[in-house]
Image 1 (tube, rainbow, N blue to C red):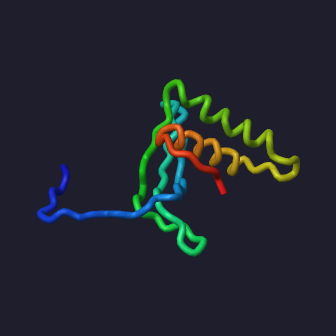
Image 2 (image 1 turned 120 degrees about the vertical axis):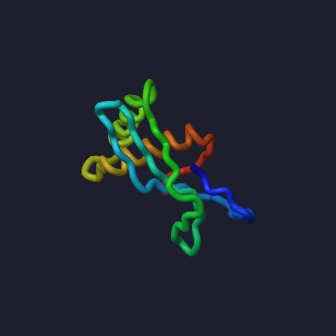
Length: 106
């Protein structure tokens, strides 16, 4: 049940950065759960403004989302392949697809 506020709160901030803070795979249900924050950069550091947004990737999108990490890993230079980075880049692709936002992973 929600808490209905007697006085409203206005939140105004330019969002220019998204950051994944956790992800998990449910192999039984064939779901990827990605939790990310929306925020902005301040002096080179990420400042979250909207926290813990959940994106569930399932159904027909489940296997292509995982396969996306293979594409990134295969494009990495031999000796510097990072499975973790490749997976996160593929998950950022899924967030961009879901939110219709664009950008690059830094």
